[in-house]
Image 1 (cartoon, helix red, strand yellow):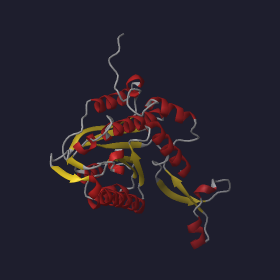
Image 2 (cartoon, helix red, strand yellow):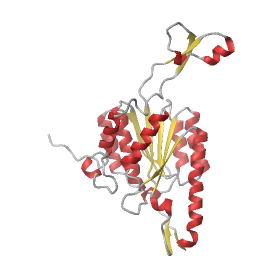
Image 3 (cartoon, one colour):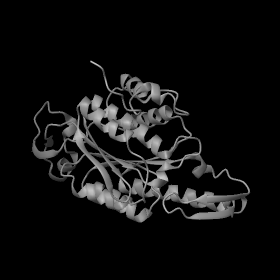
Length: 299
């Protein structure tokens, strides 16, 4: 039987042609899984059920020392049976994500990240869903865990292009309000939006006891501002143009950019969300492996 074409976010031959991505997303994930002692994403679905009296031989990791200190009574916490995790990938597909100076856009990088994380979690039998948004939800795929579902999700990434205005907070609130079961939420975006509103959306998930990971993606030119002389900049979402001298505004731009990043780092930490800064100049396989390794150690 003849097979149809595979998605570029799943097919190694096409992935290998993308600049700075020497290893394939699937190869990276499979190689990393082989070295894992435990999944970096497991353990979010166990729900506390009730207390019961301690019996000799019970696992002490569930012993409630606080109750013992207050009452001198020995209790253990019982949990409902842990089920497989449900993860939702929120991918920003607004026009600003289409920026990239060397052929690889922020959106491309975000798609590789979404594809690799989907592959990783489906391999460990977790359910993965996808939401693609700009200033509204453009595509929403419910969470499933089958290989066929993974292929369908990656095919949808294949046909998505960045366009439209940014509106992160409304999407976060809409998804949070429709999520009945707590799980893992992974936001992939440049986060170029009102920071207070974005963090209100993140805190909505945290209030509902979801775990949140934020991948804040930037092209290296946005980080370093390597421009000289008279430069004309174009807003990809409004088509507005601004002509200025890079040597005059460069220092102030870098200061503002660093403040922007530091505020997200600080606010995510305060909210209990995991923040990861991503520079598209870093080879994709190294970024993903380093993050997953860090996460495994933290857990």
